[in-house]
Image (cartoon, rainbow, N blue to C red; front, top):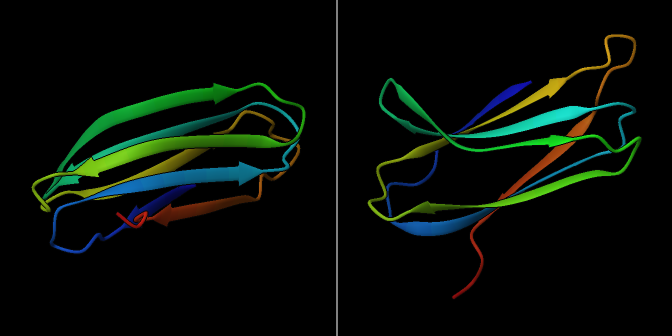
Length: 91
């Protein structure tokens, strides 16, 4: 799964949360996007049987960056439903 988030053109701090009850290992990646350029910010491999949860901050100080969330499922026999939340916490 690869999901693009077009963030507003303003600076801010965001919190990215991914939750899944999939069976088997999952890899979560957070990418920073500026135009056509993608840069890996965070990569985390979860080996839980179920109850995968991953959180990462995403700071957008210039307000020019967007966000891509990538989830790789290492279990070819099962699908991996994942919930993705991107929020800007109140200051």
